[in-house]
Length: 395
Image 1 (tube, rainbow, N blue to C red):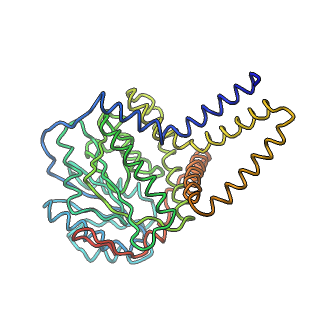
Image 2: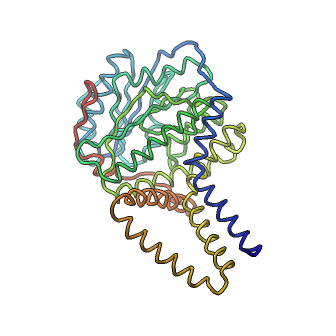
Image 3: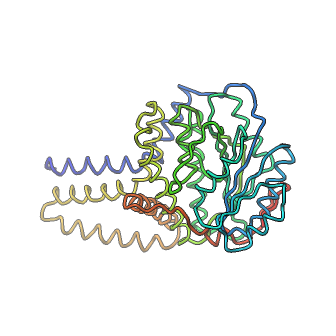
């Protein structure tokens, strides 16, 4: 093999390693780090003044069950303040919420401003010590909030994220199954990150924040990632609370799931770009976790593509005149894989690559200036499926 061919082969291997690292060697390295450098929580004073904030657009099918669920949580935590923002809904969301009267604090906007603007407005209305953030289509286990806020007894903790479980009680699709496997890996990595100091950002379905550390994000940036990473940049910890559980119906339509992943990746990369100057100054361990878990994962599909290009170049340089034949064989193999991915075990592989492609597309859309400040919730995640969680019911 000539030197150029060897160089291309090395570059192909390096690109493939970078694509696989967030899913393979990252969790292995975090497991080792957790043993060598554990970061247990300390004790202290437990917070007493709590608030929970929810933003809703057209959520008439789920909003009553969401409020009833939070009222059930308040039965265990007297004094829990419930604040709900309605972003110019065109259905009966605001009217349903108005029926709760003084049991909740309701803000209805006449114009659409997006979730981030709504959350900023709600946080400004409360003086609670700890603010819990959640979504309108999520159901909490009734002890979720008390478990979620327990780590704040440690003064080094600025943010805590719970454990989201996707449920699909009707007929799980391959998309839901793959998403479940992907999400379990994601939650495992978060638990390892927490054991080594801090999680790299929180999910908007269930997380809590010290009110004093809230940094209002611009309305075009997604609030959960911005405010949680701001806590990290301010030197406080983000921890995962595995037993603070929330439930959400999975998106069952592949096209909707693809669009959702594009949107989330675009929003997340926008936050990355906005906070980059502060993120690069994180301590070495946190910077390693952030670059591995977030940045490399966002770019995985580009590394996969680069690996393929360098591999083909290495084959061409090594094979010389036989390159055309080798390329033909690769084309046949690729066609077979695409066809096989439509059926059987390779169906899940197709879904994984679809997720990577959606993420890469989201990064590209971020770089071209898209924001997704407002959007419509996916219909299949608001389908009226009833989910029984203890005494709480979502319909």
